[in-house]
Image (cartoon, rainbow, N blue to C red):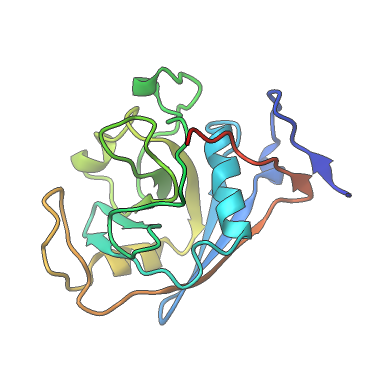
Length: 197
């Protein structure tokens, strides 16, 4: 009770009301992320639910790739696994034309497998603006952007790793732990996301 409900019907959220996520990384500091419910509404609702339920608290960042991405969000601290469900991919390749967010340094986007609707909890933060980053446009659901702490993202992307990931980068030799994530929804009550399975 209280606040404004963001109903399932389309609603434009004013920029000053965009949800704000604080991602606290052990030994590095806090990364502040603005979410974009107008670009990827169900993706944002899914992320908010996971953050509010403490899903990401204590998880590691198992993939770093300099000038490309950081990736996390699996409960097994690998690049496999998720929350037990998936959501529809809100990006152009999957028939979702509304999301026009371009992948550039600081953009938050959902990781997925070959199935366009296989994203669940894993996400990545772009750590650069090279051609590999821009090639993600229209193929992955961008849904937020770092507004403070991009220097932390870039620093983490440069840590020593094992080069184990064929798509780029690897697992850090020293664990990088997200101690907690919180979200301020600016008084808007976002409903549960639509889940596929």
